[in-house]
Each structure stands twice: as C-alpha cells, then as structure tokens.
Amino acid sequence: MGQITSHEALAVRWAELCNDPLLRDLPGKVELNAYGTIELSPASTRHARLQAAIAQAFFQLPGGAAMTECAIVTQDGVRVPDVAWASPAFIARHGDSTPLPQAPEICVEVRSPSNTDEEMAMKTRAYLAAGAVEVWIVSEAGALQVFDADSEQPASRYGVRLALPAAAPR
Image (cartoon, rainbow, N blue to C red):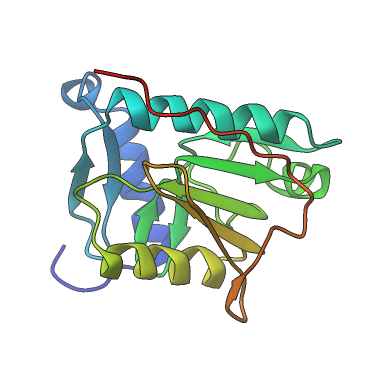
C-alpha cells in the first residue's frame, strides 16, 4: 500500500483478509501494520494457556464482554490483542464491528519470545491512542505490567483477580 493508510482503508483491507479463503488456515495471529502489510505471530501452548486464564478472569467481571483476538483499527494498523475486555456501553456502541473502530477498555498482549520491547511499547501506545483505558503486558512467566495513559500502574483499576497458570514441565 506504500503510504500510511487511513482507518477506513485498513478496515477495508481487513475485511478482504477475513474473506480470503487462502488465509483461512494460517497458524498464529494475523495483524496489519500501518502500511496494510500482513504480519504473522506464531502461538505456543503456553501463550494459549495464558490467554485462556486471562479471559476466564475477565468473565468474572460484572457485565461487559471478554474477547480473544479481536481486531482493532489503531494508528499503527489493525492490531489484535490476545485478550480484551469491553464494558456493556462499549458493546452497545460497537457491537460485533470488525475491525473495531476503537479499542475496548482493557487490551492485553501476552508476550512471546519473539516480541521486542519496542514492539510492546508500540502496541501499548496504539491501544491507548485508540481508546483503551488500560493495556496489560503479560510475560510468558506470568509477570503482569499495567499501563494507562499516564504511565505504568501497580495494578488494574478494574479489580480483576488474575490467577495465571504456572509453566508446565516439558
């Protein structure tokens, strides 16, 4: 696509990808960068277990919706947090729009060994700029970092009780 695309162009490109039968069985998470180029991230079993534990914790919050791998149009392309939580008001405004035109209140990235600090910082900024109230970064070891628009915070303001599974022996 050559130049940074508009949100609308990224949404159209995303719809094309979602309907492309050649991309249906790709392993891992698919995202679009700000230029509309496909980026793939392979997933591990540990990554999947952490995603499930976080989603389970979000199901305990009153109201709202827990989502895994929902697409969001951001300033840095269509990004797909591993897990997100959206309030009832957010769901009423956006329903099942794909990609979402705004970030849900909480966006969570489970860090993979291939993720760089720069990439995690970029995604954090992108989700916050798109409207997230908090962005969580969870390491494969289970360490949690919570960011809001101001800085890193000691805990989530949403009172989520997070119990992450220990790494299983190999």
